[in-house]
Amino acid sequence: MLIDSMYPKSFASDNHAGVHPTVLEAIAAANHGDAPAYGDDRWTSVFEDKIKEVFGPGAEGFAVLNGAGANMVGLALMLGRYDSILCADSAHIATHETGAAERLLGVKLMTIPTEDGKLRPDDIKYRLGVIGNPHESQPSVVSISQATEFGTCYSPDEIAALAETAHEAGLRLHVDGARLANAAAYLNCDLRAITTDAGVDVFSFGGTKNGALAAEAVVILDPSLTPGLPYLRRQSLQLASKMRFVSAQLSALLTDDLWQENAAHANEMAARLANGIADVPGVSLTYPVESNAVFATLPPAVAETLQSRYLFHYWDEPTGVVRWMAAFDTTPEHVDDFLADIHKAAVR
Image (cartoon, rainbow, N blue to C red):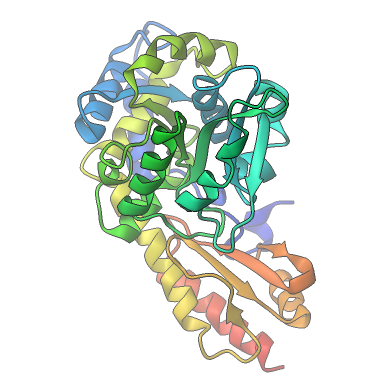
């Protein structure tokens, strides 16, 4: 299916967006002459310094190729053979990574039902009774998504409370940060406030959904975990030979707060879309709009009409819930045209 020939704009995923011009320029700038492979290049050195600048001097950043790989490498650092991960039942590692955690890490996912995708300290405490029981997988890591799969965001205080609960029980806190930038933009805080300062141990920093081509990072804040990362990254097939092109993209996003500009714009377009459907008959918001995702409940006929022109997916087809995503390159005109068609479809 050729999206650009059939649809005026995709609202299915921020992965559908192109590459930000500044990021493309960074790739082109790195494309001159030879450079050592596997990260022994000056672009990767600059990226590693940027990580320390943004997240603190104790932060160690490692560039990888995709979000699922970033999650698997980061989680592998903290898990033993009989351990388990506590996560929301909607978490990406539990729903959209094809069982990678179970298959590649060999651990159990202990999923916890939530109404908004967010874990609370009591969710963790309730499941700590199995610690020490040889008949039970042992909780070792709490993993949260920021923003969540429902587009909701954890505040710095909420993350700090989870970190405190996890650490008191001897667990570590992992953050799937595929849309970390969108969460920070919504919360009007810097990236450090929802990672380093909140007590996170390991997190991924998503670049691809924020204007990069194929660039993510694993960031380690617990120094005891750093020595194992280079080996796990290689073993997990996440060590790029021409690393300079991955590192250059991440450095571009972390320079002059481009990450924030891109994420804030995407969030603004999602809010514009959400505000625009407030008075549409039969259409309602399903979750609060706190990032660049809009979840809406549509009558089947409305959804069918819209999908004949726009690319987007059902989130829960039996209940009529769809997901619309905005990206750094979504324009007000894109949103307004979509809204006009939503209004037309709803009043037929």
